[in-house]
Length: 284
Image (cartoon, rainbow, N blue to C red):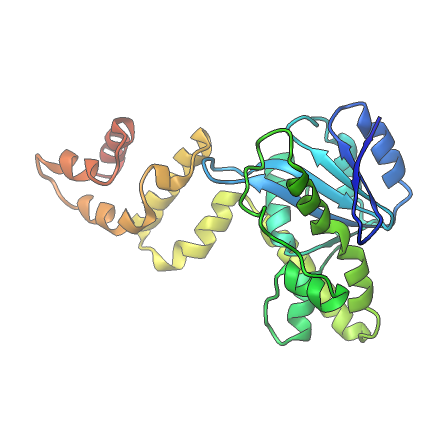
């Protein structure tokens, strides 16, 4: 059964951990009655090309579910929920979470309201953190000490559990407060911006990263950049493990040389011999 693991003193919400396949029937039966949910993710993205999802948090008006994705494998029902256009999903910084969900689980959210985008519209472009928005609307100060903790270690600590729960606990309430007295025109703008942020996160990582940089690169620089991205994607390692991006102009310059010591020069930038051989054969 789903296990109650603690209650938030301030909110009185039940928090349950979903960490086995037997839990999902109960979880998704409960979610089938919901028309609005809060969503957040905790993940690790330090030594891989793709993010590694650790915990997916889902909040309703009365409960918080922490889905342990190091143990939870079946995503069929979850995909139905998060891609259901009839269920409103409330997030903070939807682009980040949609990036994780689309790349890790092949889930593409829609019908999203991003409370950060809402606050950005209200404040003429200023970007607020989740803690800032919670403080403004809920008059509660959150501790963010677990942001960079090891989310791949098990069991989760009590501090991590509390942190993960609080990251979705206030989303629905804030949404209601933000939309209470705003015009339909402003509301439409927020939904439009939330939708666009989510779509941006749904892009393939390689496409997203290339789009940000292509206008600053020469034709040859783009080729080298995409070569590195393809390798990193295939081997699931950070692109900087192959070579740092700041060294791309130097590599581009080396492609124009034809010297006996070219290999040594490339070696100073690219450490792995198999990458060196491929780079020289492809670009020199």
